[in-house]
Image (cartoon, rainbow, N blue to C red; front, side):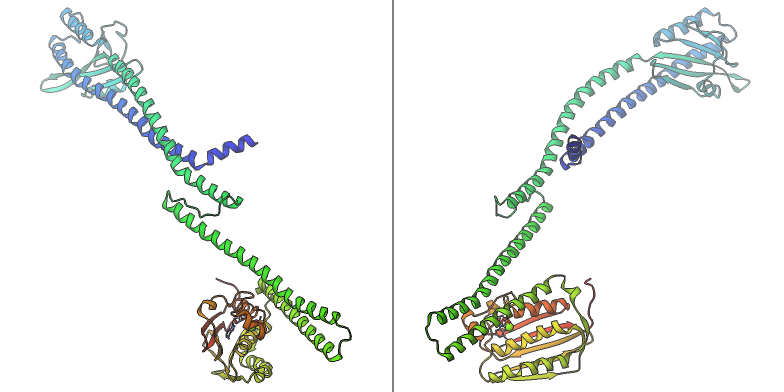
Amino acid sequence: MKKGQGFKKIINSLRFQILVLVVVVGLLPTAVLFTLYNNLYVSQSVESDVSEIVPQGEVVISQIISSGYLNNTEQENINTLLQALGNTYGGRIMVVNSSLNIVKDTYKIDEGKTAISPEIIQVMNGKYAYFYDKSNSDLFVAVPIISTFSGEELVVGALIINKSMNYINTNLDYFFNVEIVFGLVWSVLVIIAGIYFSERVGRPFTKFSKSLKDIEDGISDSDIHVNNFSEMGALSEQMNSLLNRMKVVDESRQEFVSNVSHELKTPLTSMKVLADSLNSMEDVPNELYKEFMLDIGDEIDRETQIINDLLTLVKMDKGARESLNISSVNMNELIELIMKRLKPIAEKQNIELVFESFRPVVAEVDKVKMTLAITNLIENGIKYNKETGWVHVSINSDHQFCYIKVQDCGIGMPKESIEHIFERFYRVDKSHSREIGGTGLGLAITKSSIVMHRGDIKVHSVEGEGTTFDVRIPLNYIEEAE
Ligand code: ATP
Ligand code: MG
């Protein structure tokens, strides 16, 4: 079983197939060429011999006619002539009369018999014919004996000259030997070329897979460089960018895990400190006790909030689209409700909340998830603002999309932070943000929610001047991605 598989593997390998291809392409034409050449040589030799034999035969035929040999074959001079002709060609000479009877055979084998063959029939029509018997290397040339009776030409018989063509075989044997030697040398060259090309094509693949294996085994961390062919170069590049992406994903996963542990630990540490200090004191005054307990309660709320946010995010990550609860929602009302809820926080910081509606918009969305997304945007606008600042929220639509804009005149953020703000736990200024409060999960949730609705979100911010978030959501929920 294993052996068979190994054999199949070799047969299916690119190297083997290229080797076979090169060998076939290299050897096949040579074999065909040799065969063609040999056949051409035989037919050329036969034709040249025939063109030599026919005039000789015609000379003899003129003697046969003038002597009336067909009626009397006992004429010594003609018989000698025929014998001499036979000797010249190393074969037999036969004379056939109009009834296809063999009246003369210099070998005396077939005399008196009837000669029937396609060539004889053709000759009786007045044209010479020939037949080459390859296995015995015998050439038979039949020349018509034409006599003229009162101005009319009549075929009265045929002269058949047989020539032994042994020289053709001798030459073919010689050619064969040359061809074998040449063929062997050529085969060796072709096989060497085949091995060279199959190696040339196969090596980059081996190198590529070895590089991948090294990366997988952790032996190497560098990029793959296999550029022997442009296709291979493109593949390497593609692979490298995939590997880099995997590295980034892995790093962000590690970072996420460490962030989560850190964020979850912080409230616990605070609670521990508060509890320890209460424990270490004797006779704790009632007010202080209450104050510490309130602080501990706050920390518990914070911990709960972080865990809830994380759970929301995880839920959104996992096959989230199926969990969307889509209904037609009046977006204007939704935003007004959110703003009403956030009003107390805004008022506490003297922030003015303004809502501007360009038209009533109804969109097919998941109300809860959309509320989460918009709430966080407006809440951020309030949180990262200045005393007596404002947050403007506007809604508009066209025939396809609903547009929501959340604009504030707050602290803004530096350019380099903008690309990170949708990452989990990312906060622009940790120390500043701590007193403001928050975990850095809000925008990650916002983005997930909007992406689930096949919408998108863009941010524009200038440090010290303010921030604008532009959200675009399709009015009609899109079931499947194209
Ligand atoms: P959470 O929303 O989870 O309570 P958070 O508000 O800090 O915490 P995000 O909403 O994800 O987290 O925002 C990430 C960071 O982006 C914020 O910490 C803040 O630094 C910055 N940011 C977000 N919105 C604004 C804004 N409107 N103006 C200035 N900075 C902002
Ligand atoms: Mg937030």
